[in-house]
Amino acid sequence: MPRRAKLNDESKIIFVEIELSQRRLPMDLDEQQKKLEAVAGLYQLFLKGDPSKLSTSLAPNYEQFPPQRPGLEPGIDNFMQGFMEGFGASFSDFQGALTHVLADGDYVYVPSEFSAVHTGDAFGVPATGKRVNFAASDLHLIEDGLITKTWHLEDFYGILTQIRGD
Image 1 (cartoon, rainbow, N blue to C red):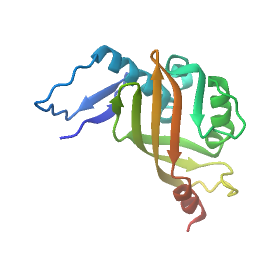
Image 2: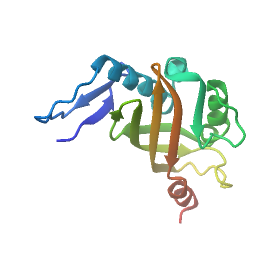
Image 3: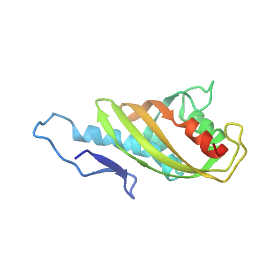
Image 4: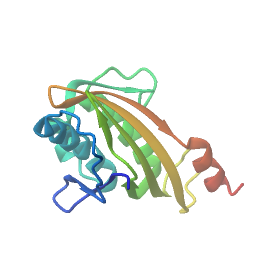
């Protein structure tokens, strides 16, 4: 049975349905938990509209690839500005789940499924009030307990076809 991850009410990632194989790999569970907590703090912005944990999740020189908006310099404030002026200005009422959380060394991979309401101009389409569903995948690099880089992919084409009614 695979590991399944979710955020509990205390904003921590917990694992359910864990099956351990006979093969044991050495790992520092405290270090792994710190990485998972950093990742959980980032997703609070999207799932609960709570940016308060960003400074304990993202490194001061945090970079996202591609950036929230072309030309943005690295940093938490620029990431937030890009989100609030971009995707966050076009969509609201985010709901979703982290479908898996996979940690390997300094990397944490998080595929997720979200929905949001189209409440502002997006991709040249004025607000429709439609709820859209989309998938995203993130690969986070964690250094010294903070996310320093994220490689982010999102199903923008799927969002566009939903808001246009294709």
